[in-house]
Length: 337
Image 1 (cartoon, one colour):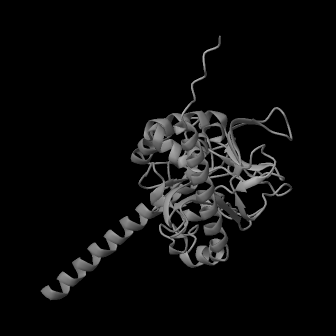
Image 2: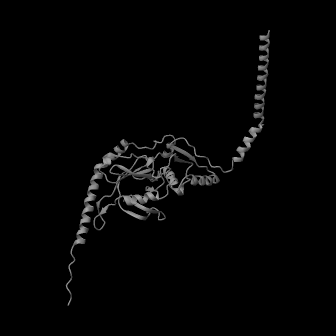
Image 3: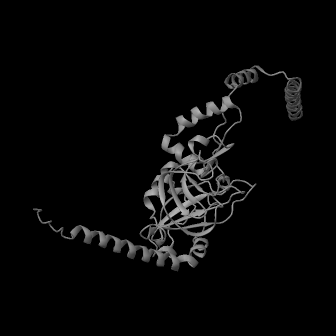
């Protein structure tokens, strides 16, 4: 009897508890459906609303080696974002981030998303899409290559990568000539033959008849030039001092020796996703393999080495001739009567 009475009491308590829980759930569902919030929910909601402002820039989306930094269309939000961007990163770090997105400071917001490395290397070498070493170039002292697919250039010295950076090559209607070329003449400030308003700092011509060269100009984040190879100012200066010019015969009518070899290759994915955006999903998405670069360069190595040897001989002969002129004794003239 006692045992039966105990079971009856326990069952009654369980029914009462379940009824209260059901009532609580029903109340919560009713509050949700009618829009009524509890005191705690009201407090959280008010706190959230208080934190929301009209122009709040989106936060960086961290997801791996590269992160997405969304850029809003709203001008106020862009201004707020610029303040955060400038505070979060140093000038050199901002420069590197923009370079990875093929942008200069003038065109910094010419994108809806910036690809930002989780760890900033201001030299850019940690993010190089080009191989660090190419044995096929071991005998080539200086070499410059421009990739159309990823809008980037690289510099190799005896096969070792010494520098790489962004570029903006010829737009679809005026594409840059592909293939092997050689650096010709250079000028610190050239005037475009297409439009006299176009000033081209640190211009280095690589196709004399086609008027193609590399120089500083706007980098808007896509191929936009009139066939030339646009560079950031620092890169244009560096390459201006690095590459060798051609050597002309006396009078300048004929060429005696070629300058630094340059190869332009590939095709840009017109109308498709920008190649560097793929880094958000795959940090190796833009990488060019050693095999691909070797197959590209190997057919031209013999010519590049031959031109290099010829230039060295010509340069040596010119230097020797100048040295002889300096050392030649100057005859004293006899005094006049």
